[in-house]
Image 1 (tube, rainbow, N blue to C red):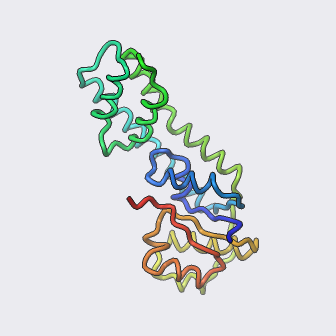
Image 2: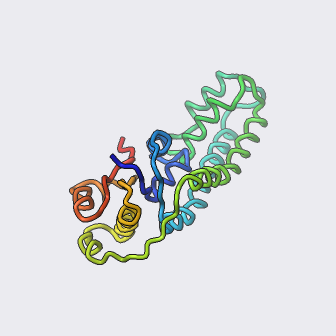
Image 3: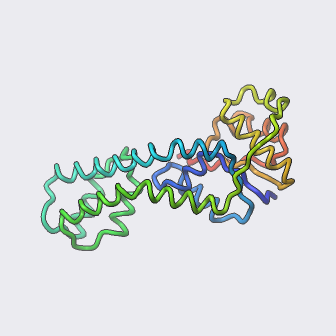
Amino acid sequence: MSDASFLDTGVVLGFCFRDDTHHHRCRQYLDGHDFALFVSDHVVSEYLNREPSLAQEIADGIFDHIDRLHDSAFEGQLDSMDTSQIRQNLIGGHNRAGTTLHAFYRNEVPNFIQFDDLTGRLRDLARDIEQNAIESRETLMEQAEVWERDEEYPEIDDGFSEIPWDDRRICLDAHDVAEVTEHLTELATTNPTDLVDDGYRELILERTALEDVVSLANRS
């Protein structure tokens, strides 16, 4: 049984962003396991590169929802039936902030609220998205060790020629953790297409010191 986990970038994103498709499974995995956590400097770099743009996408989803509110017939004091209708009718199925918006209406909106107060709270919610992600990242990084790999492992790398380079690098980083620390290490990913499916998991386990490759992807 694994006593350490190496997290790929998708798992960190899933943990930090509530609207990420894989958020629930990533949170469940990290909250429900007691093992050493590792990320590589490559993972941290990729995450930091994507964090601002993802936060902006979610904030844009909230502002889009505010625009739809202003175009609706709702005004003045709203009651719980009004806000329930707003949740049902004005949060589009493809809104990037859908999960955050539903949680906001469910947990933070009182039974009676003025329309202008509601839109003001929504603007505050949009402004807080990136800061919330930063705080989640900092919480995770307090638990995880950032690993820097010195070895290139050319023979292992050559055997992964079918795997895209970014994912090969993740495999090599995770292998190095297992090799150097001697932890029974599993690689946790949200990218089963290139790391789990079609025999990739078996290939990785055959050529590396990893104990397992675990998919946290939500395939539904």
